[in-house]
Amino acid sequence: MFKSTIFITLLLFTMSCGYEPLNSKKNKINGGNFSIAQINFIGDREINIKIKEKLSTYSNNTREKNYTLNIESESLKRTIAKDIKGNPSLFNLSIKIIVQLKREDNTGTKFIFNENFKYNNNEDKFEMKRYEREIKHNLAQTISNSLITKLSNLQ
Image 1 (spheres, one colour):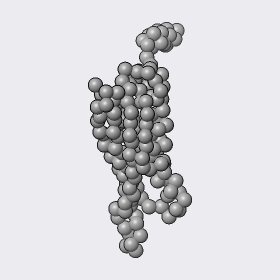
Image 2 (cartoon, rainbow, N blue to C red):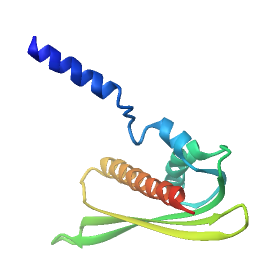
Image 3 (tube, rainbow, N blue to C red):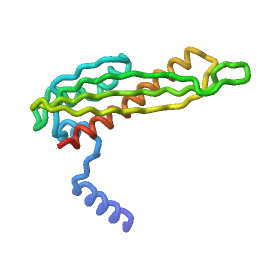
Image 4 (cartoon, helix red, strand yellow):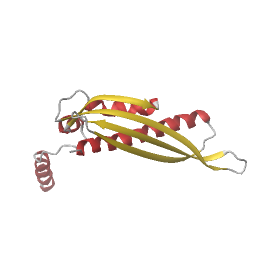
């Protein structure tokens, strides 16, 4: 009886506190104080698609701040280490994104985002390509989250 009474009181307190997840879609759409009028992409297609997916919730909303974004993306895969035979054993995938932001009053700001990831070589080339694509998508999402945070905090 005592356990059920504690459980019910805890349930009532937590239900009435107004808790909402911080990164819920509702908060992203309604809580953002900006909207994106237009996005222009140049560069790596895969990265651009991931960024566009992430920023699509902020498009065509009428908010206090309305931005136009020009996004230039590039990815670079470098060999960091080789084995005894000279075959690559360690790679570094780096993504660089340059965002030029234009406000409604034609003032602009430029942001540069860089992300890197090191990974080992794989003998199966198909799995290697799939893994590289997955890394690229994850890095693009990380940069997109950083961009959204920057846009939200702009004055």
